Length: 111
Image (cartoon, rainbow, N blue to C red; front, side, top):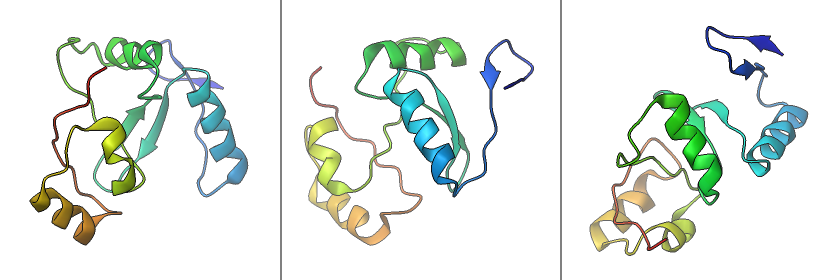
């Protein structure tokens, strides 16, 4: 592993590399952070269902705890786990543009 400008250890991997993807998945399962490209920016990711991992996102970004984070999901079938509702208009957008660079802002489910 090499060191970036910060003291956070990092490792750059080429994708698609199944070993690298498995390594990233194991890091996520261990409540660690991973960086990944999206269609528009690079993201810093963690297991959104793990409160300790999410706290690491806030610490790494020096972000106030009251600020929202993005939850990346595979498809609309995962929405009910994270959001209280998917309004009809949002359903149409998701159907037309997912998978792809579409961000929907939805009210979250209770913790």
